Image 1 (cartoon, rainbow, N blue to C red):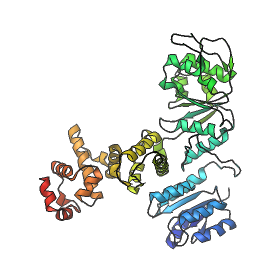
Image 2 (cartoon, rainbow, N blue to C red):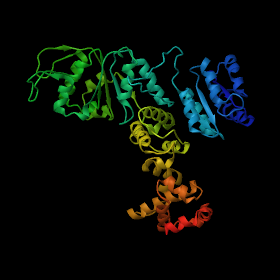
Image 3 (cartoon, rainbow, N blue to C red):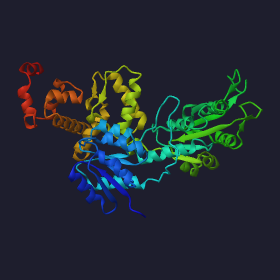
Image 4 (cartoon, helix red, strand yellow):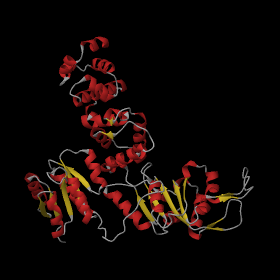
Length: 475
């Protein structure tokens, strides 16, 4: 196999030499000494990957990326930054950068990111692009390799009638993917009907899907069309299909095979042309083995399986998602917030997001509603995110030596406050604001936990600088 060609675009000689040393054994490395030199080299050589510095004299990395995209729309680009400025990273990702790495170079990191690029499935240059939008303009955006596989799967299946099974934890965006398949495909002008099997009782779910005739059961005062009938020439999305009963699974299998059904209490066969998409947050194959889900239905609905990774496994997407939801809600909410600080976004990237993208979306909306500041700081974030960031920074778990609830909580509190003091150079007023509390409560907690200001970095300096009157009011 021919060696891959990598173009390094950086105006620092040291960075150029470092990249050569790290990559030359496995790849052919070409050097562009500034942004202006990159396009000619791209025309001269077949380049497979670009390592592009963000901060350069003359044409900077963002402008260079724009130039590259004009002629090489699909060429993988990895941004290199010394500052790790979140806003720059977001802008680069939105323009199609594959990933980013930071200076000074970590040998394993740069080799790993480059290897990840070349480990991707090769995509033919003539493969159609995927417009992953729903009727409301929501967009699936990601720089993660696994999510790129999801986008390619949407592109391949959108103009077919193949049944799709979307697998993923709650909150990963399964309905958004289903909408993307529908609204980017040939059925986009037809109806999209979504049903959540877990939210409807078993006795009513059959009627919801297939409809019923007047008098079919107590309370059926009139004929009602089901969602299969309403989704004719469009798409029916059934979420949490694992919660359907065995009897209903048999009826689903028939309608998917024969494209016909009867309403509850009816005799007439109703023909339908429906694209069926199902979703689940559980292991359906395991359910088949346990006899909880029909094997024949599983293979009928899982013609094209699409698996969504949890947000904790694609944290590089968080800055882009924060930016997306911020702009989305800013159009609806009159908020004072103008931007999220780098520290705030970094704290969010350290959190594992058990509720996935839905949890992140809710957090952004809550912040825009409640924060009365133009810039979101870490202390504006929900407590669980701030605590997680402190634990990660302070290796809190390894230091706990008390098995009592009260002792454990005290150690958590002490480490949190000490960490916050360090981050704010020991300034009590700034530390209190960072923790989302008052200076008076902070001083009380420090005294209770035995945190002595004079022994901590800049706290002694702050004690001298704080007005005497304020100290007197705290006594």
